[in-house]
Image 1 (cartoon, rainbow, N blue to C red):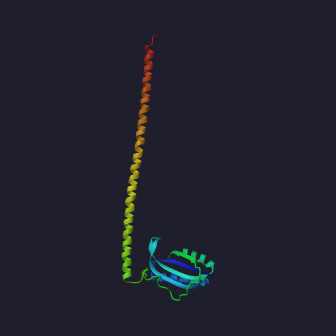
Image 2 (cartoon, one colour):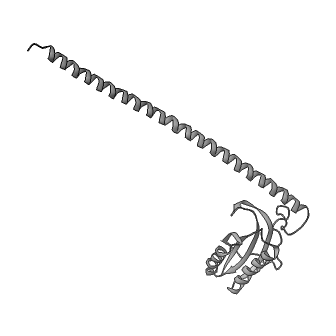
Image 3 (cartoon, helix red, strand yellow):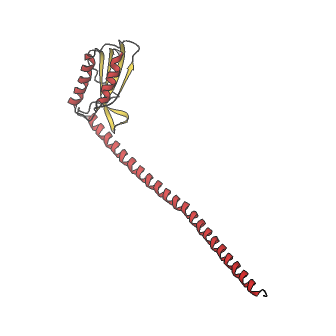
Length: 200
């Protein structure tokens, strides 16, 4: 038996009952495979460090347990097949974790926001942050669009400018060919006249 810590992130757009069902499903599966759970931590709805599948928030769940190494591979495969799980990570612990019977609701109450299902000031703050995030996304999209349009315009101008010297060169070459042909004709006419002027 080895000691492990697994963290997985559930899509926060799901309802509270659905999140609880996923947590129970994962825990029941681990226990059925012979894992012994030392502690369970639910960080609640928390801002992600970066967007995952266009989601900015997720419910972080952390489990500390002991099991056979084979379970970790199976568990990773299970998480990979669950659409509701945005990401997951499992690490090996150096020593036996502390046993905590009750589920920890938040890793750090000051740093972690309350779940989306709760009402109050936190939800209002989250709504304001989400609106601000939405405005930032719209502004970024507009900036990207303007930048792309400017880039396309510059490329078009550059192509036109690169085509013009080519056209000028072709015109010059055509003039030179015409001049050479004209000179050749004049030479031929001159030779014919000289032949006629020679005494028989």
